[in-house]
Length: 180
Image (cartoon, rainbow, N blue to C red; front, side, top):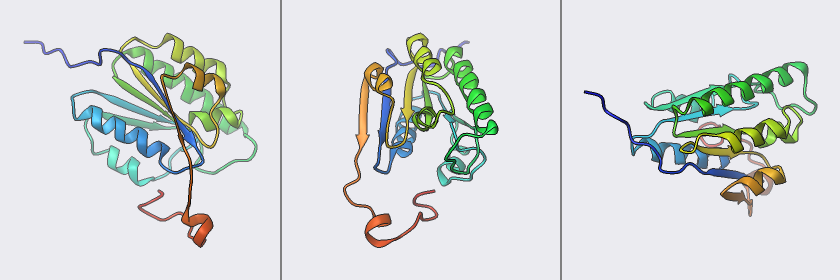
């Protein structure tokens, strides 16, 4: 007896960016909600390779939520050859996952940062959006900026705006279990 799994009726494109905190967290939350309804999620992280973020460790224990990291955990000012290679690998892998039509939601975490830092170019990302299967939801996150063409193509655009942050107001640095 073959069981057909539930699929989204329509996959849209969501974008989360801005100077405020919570972009990746919002994307993961959306993924967890979808899993609760029987959907499958894949998160591909650009520029976050092999770093033990708390959310990554949690995702490993959630069925139907897969994740792969690319890049270096080191923040870079100028892309190195390694960063460019990892960006290329991440894009190719994202295309493979999206076009497989096996996942209902695909999260491209930090793709906006990878574009703004010239680790990858905008064109392949635009192609992914334009050619994605109809029932695949794409969620793109980025840093302070998101390429205008991505915002234009997206169905939902959320800008996270920092009003007050303990980094600047109290000098408190990133906290284990809270920011990573």
